[in-house]
Amino acid sequence: MAGGRVAGVVRRLVMGVVAVVAAGALCVPSAVAADSPGYWYVDDTGVRDAWAQGITGEGVKVAVVDDEMISNYPGYAGADVSFKAAIKHGDSCSTSKEYNGDIVTGRRTIKADNAGRKAGDGGIYTTHGTNMMAFIVGNGQGYDGNPGVLGSAPKASVTSYAKGFATTGLLDGVIVPCMDSDDAPISGPDSIRAAAEGGARIISLSIDQNITGLGVPSILYAVRHGVIMVTGRGNDPVKGTKDLVGKPGAMNEFPGQVVTNMVDRDGNIDKSTDVMDGNVTTLSPGVDVLRYNKAEDKAPQIMGGGTSVATAVLSGYLALVMSRWPEATGNQILQSLIRNTKGNDSGEAKLDPEHKRGFGEVDLGKLLEVDPTQYPDINPILQWQVETSEKHEETKGMYTSHADWEDYSYGETDPFDGDNGERTIRVPKEAELVGQELDRQVKAWKRVEQCRADGGSDCMRYSATNTADEADKSTPLPDTGGGKAVSSGLPSWFWWAVGGGAGALVLAVGGVVLAVVLARRKRNRGRHGGPGNSGPGAPPMPPAPPMPPMTGRPGVNAPTAPRRLPQGPAVPSPYGDAPGSGPNPYSPANYSRETASQKPQLFAPPVLSKHVPR
Image 1 (cartoon, helix red, strand yellow):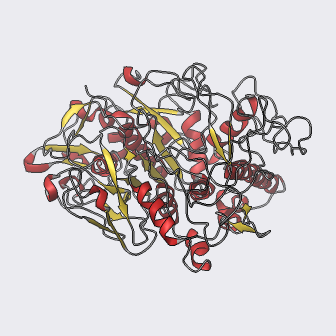
Image 2 (tube, rainbow, N blue to C red):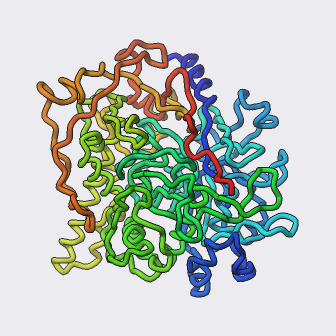
Image 3 (tube, rainbow, N blue to C red):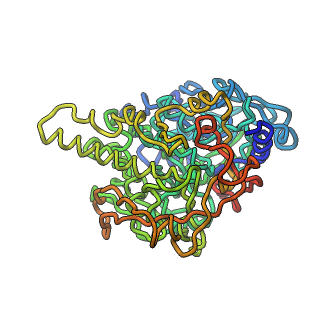
């Protein structure tokens, strides 16, 4: 693979941007006046009662993946905060020349272990990420004696993972990519992996990014280790999916994540997002909150916060819950989250049949009262999504074996999205790892239950979370092309290193539409494809792994044998090679590099890109 070709592709990828959502040490929480209108998400939800009981998030590590943050923002005084960046090659990254103009003034640099920005630098006093972190640990103090953003988990340990550079103007702008020494942008999946490896138990994701298949193992690493990932739907009236099935090609709808929508003080969904969206799991405060509106602001205002604020607020609440129940796994806390929502006293998860409110609005009081260790160490959102995908003809087979798909290939479901049923869900080959992970979690919990039935002690050592390190070493990834399956337990840099450095990371930046990629077979005719996909002449498809049905959900049957998802036509390689020839993207030399189409495009409309002004 010629280095010049790679560099050219990378430079084109740089032109993509990451869309952000709306628009983030409490020294003495009680010093901030109660009943302040913009602090209702603290005053009305039991947060101050938790503080009075010493429940402050202490001992819980949280990560915030967003744009660079103002490290000396006054609201962080006394907080345990740090600022990093998951830079793949080298210890720093810089703006690309394409952005050294109107959007970013001068050439700027982010360092891997010192990714913070100083207040006033370039005229910027706050960023989207600064707001988000403050909604978790902010002490309520702002600039020049003004109030600031107030967080709900003042003693949590929070690390920022910068995805790129902030810009001036409204905080619903873009994140400008930061390019490392190999001309590759910081990747969202890499940031998630770095946060999970760094010990984060909660990852707050108020940004969106499409991912290619090679980003799947990094996000799945966090799922496997019981890390709770909280994200938000878009701040717009665009309908989502018809049911809770997840999207394996989207960073903010990846299976197993908590997807939030925003509600006001009375629990009403904001009118801008009050639409069907099957992937919404939880409602969280995000309307009429005190926040900053522009990067140049030194005084906040009460206005709509958007689903990104709902994401950060919920992350803070979950940090309180983790500090209250330190023995519970992340999966068990997720079980409690969806079973103990406001108005649901059954103790069972109940999904809104209209697919607007998910499992309901977060109820912090219940989460602090109900011991989550009674629940299985199985990610319930992951389980629900895999099971539900098998119920629908359009999505059946998304998370089952794609062993006969060629390397670096994709399939597409039949139209399933809620927008007039016209949109499909793109499925990378690596989505099969999602089904494998759920199967692992279910089997691990059965072993825990058997241990307990036999009168054993310390049976939780067999649970999915507590065996994640062992699973890292054995979870297979697609064939490398040389007849050997690589292990997801090895870090991405391993495959780069063994290839002599030839396979540097290039992730498609958020806002770039997932590309059609190398070595894909031509689409077969027919609704679900012909030989090689499904129907007469197709190889036998293994049945989906047995999964116990979720309680409280009517009409759920055992999964049936899935159909094969059709694949798209082969396209020329972005490296200039003919389809099916040239370098194998799954080889050790190329495993850490993702490719995009030769002509990147932006989302239309951008997902998670706007504030909700009030």
